[in-house]
Length: 368
Ligand SMILES: [Zn+2]
Image (tube, rainbow, N blue to C red; front, side, top):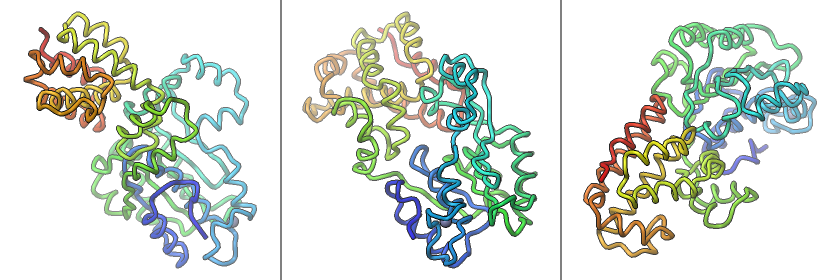
């Protein structure tokens, strides 16, 4: 048996889960913790498959061949796939045009698997995925609680997966805690989050943690193979992704290099305030990526000021412009600005107000 062979890396995590499966000792509520976009949700799906697999020997699960395994493998798992499967043309077009209202959805790939997704603005999907504030609505979690308290419909067991579980409010967490404390013998819950510290301590103590780390650079690069883009673009997005293929794909989609070009042009002019307003338009919806680009560029400026060779910079194609910035008034404050950008990134990852954080960051770069 091998769990989630399609997901790169995470050998230790898979090993731990496989051993729990073999002994049929998988805890009934689990917390999957680790960076955004590294494959936690896909491993959760594989675990659901293994828990429901009908193969006689535990060592064979998930077998990939039984009715239950095939059913889940073929079923829609994301909101997009669910909408597509329903052939909900009107909604699909609204999503494509970006005019769909903000909505959330619980996806039910099979009668005995429930996936709770945070609400988000559709149409901005991808573009704002990395910068969104996750919110799991009370009604969604009520459905999840009821789902876990009912007997399976056709499978051996029921599994609920809560994506971005840190988006639950305290009342919802307390309501689910009761379900976690006295689980029905046939129900499992997997909470997936990159911000476990936001969850109530009572919930965390109930849900053993499975920690996912960042992927190795070659795994991220391999995951990007097949994505569109020239070699430089792919390499830079992979390098900046902090070991997360999901983040690397966000950077690609959001046009990281173009965004960086716009920031370099602005810095080269001495970061004029009125231009910052125009720049702000180009960065809307890509705030996290913008903060990441600014941090990378200002670190390059600091490096150029310290005499680091052009080809050793993160962005060698901007070496000339960055050297000029390093020699100017911004050069003396490069380290400070890079630190501000790093702090902004942290704030964004901790669900800070997105537009305000970037506005503060741009305003914090001293204009000439
Ligand atoms: Zn099976």
